[in-house]
Image (tube, rainbow, N blue to C red):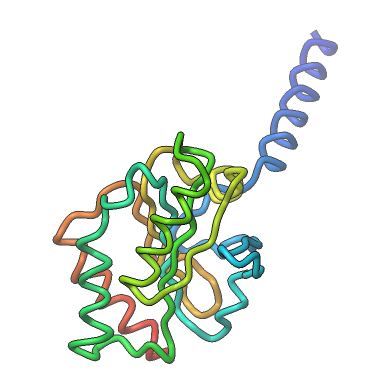
Length: 179
């Protein structure tokens, strides 16, 4: 009986250790683990590239690129038209989940370039599914994380946002930029 108990305990400890090495699963009120990705010009970026800014991180499978377009348009309007979000303290950008798509790199770069121009932003590329492992982001989807200036996750949406979430999230961004 003691051998069985010790074996189960040992197996459980190994399983926990292996799980923790696979990465944390990002959740609201958790500090987001750091990453490094490159843009189309091979320039490296981290979250610290936008130090002192609230971040809207869009993690996007190119096959689902339009899923949360309405929210991004609402944020763009709040920044550029209404001027309720101050771009001095806010940065929204995209990370393309290249691992989840069948599309070739040249097509992904074309799509990303069009989005970057439309939203006047930076697009980074995750070729290995790093944020799937590190943050627990789903494959074949469109996720949005709102991180405060200390990189604590304040909102997380996996999949399509509802229109009711748009204004609540924009208001959260406004409040976070004033902190």
